[in-house]
Image (cartoon, helix red, strand yellow):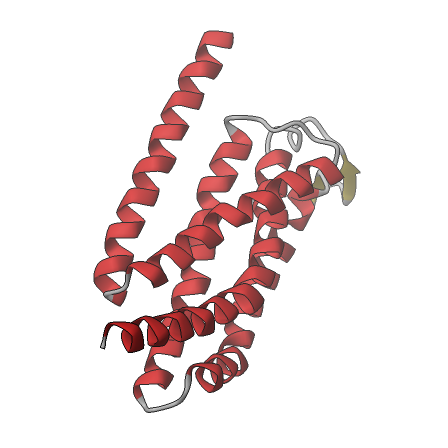
Length: 192
């Protein structure tokens, strides 16, 4: 069993690394910016802090298999939210807005889609996160049933990681976009 666990751990680490590598390649070609691709990947890495905090809060161990799959699944949602935000920022900036104005407009335009994605995902996973079992035929709700124990860590990883990552997406990403623009402008002024 320990050997199977280690094999699963190696496979998930390779899968996560390959997924992150492919994401970076796609993001760099899409945005034509290493900095913006780095912002998105860093949001994925920071979202694991939310996963760990959530598992500690729920007093659950970090299962390599289920929590690991949760982190990999979470990466797709976090990347999607950040792509939507950064793409809108770039479109507004192309129209001639300053970086700060573009960041504020981006957040005001994209807060609803980002929050809707977050809330619907969290609400959908909440019964699994809380370990609830619904028996629709007998009209019975059981908390902590045997079938829920397998999925609770996966759901908790996605739920808490996504909640934490949404704060990062709506606060840190726009701030880092403005900071990157200011640093880029100063570097261009120094080299010119």
